[in-house]
Image 1 (cartoon, helix red, strand yellow):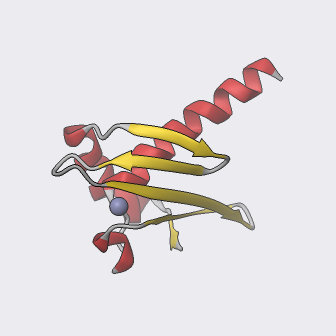
Image 2 (tube, protein in one colour):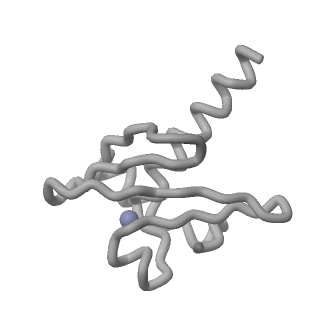
Amino acid sequence: MIKLTTESTAKAIERCRQLKPRVRFIADRTFSVQSANNSNSYTVRFDVKDGEKFGLCECKASERGFVCYHIIGAATANIYRQGLKRQTA
Ligand SMILES: [Zn+2]
């Protein structure tokens, strides 16, 4: 898994803003993100260890250790979802 920090996510946040990938919720901390370039969709998973956030995507960039825009798209959806849960709890 790739550690999500301000530095590691900066470029991906920029790409995500431009491409606006479609995100579908699958299970807790698991999302399916539609590629903006082709018909592929990638599964993104999140984990939290010792207060630090980690993400993993199925695409090539993530395989090479980069934070991709799929992870950011899913992270945005995840934050939104956590916020909703908190409001209704
Ligand atoms: Zn990806």
